[in-house]
Image 1 (tube, rainbow, N blue to C red):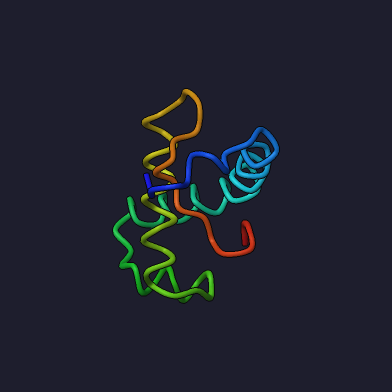
Image 2 (tube, rainbow, N blue to C red):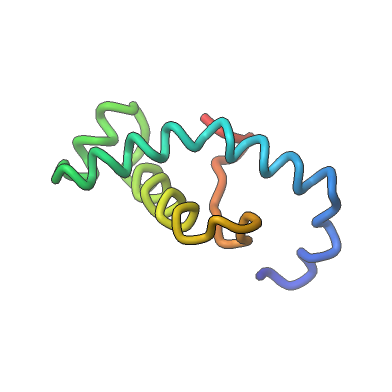
Length: 84
C-alpha cells in the first residue's frame, strides 16, 4: 500500500470502489473468458477498444476478485475515473 494512503480510505471512498468494481466486473469477466479460450491480449484489446495493458489489468483484476471472495483488496487496480 502506498505511504499515506490509508487515511483516505473512508467508508464513502470504499463504497465508491465497490460501486465501480460492480460496474466493471462483467467486462473483467468477459476479458478473462476470452483469455482463457486462448485469445491474445492484443486481440481482446481490439474487441474492447482499449490498450493491451488495460486488458491485462482486466484479467488480473478478475483473477484477484475470484481469489478473494471476502472484502475487496487494495490490490485491485481501477481505471482513472471509474469503470469503463
